[in-house]
Amino acid sequence: MAADLQTIYQSATETEALQALEKFQIKWDKKYPLIARSWRANWGRVRPMFDLPIEIRRVVYTTNVIESLNFSLRKIIKGRSSFPNDESVYRLIYLGLAHVSKKWTMPIKNWRSALQQFAILYDNRLPLEALTNS
Image (cartoon, rainbow, N blue to C red):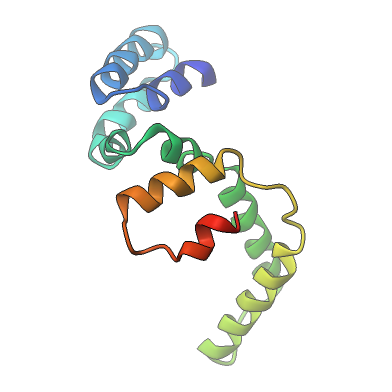
């Protein structure tokens, strides 16, 4: 099933993705009827991905890093039932991010080509150092 879902979000165009979604729905709808329905209901949020270059999409649709970060932050906050003020929450999250970021040793796959595409799309928003130091 995961491979069929990958076919949807890794499609080159929105039209191909909708065709892949249709095939997914035919194959899996009896067993998992809510999945295709959810994709269709949220298509407005998915569709902008197909406007991005493939190099950026490869970086963006990788959620493992995001899920890992969310898990780490939840783990840090879980042990505290209340906070005296907002500032204490910000400090805890800041320190948690500093601690978690030390574990990030692997580079993001295809980051260099994605960064170059970001520089093309968002001209003058990225400092030149970001392109030469990556």
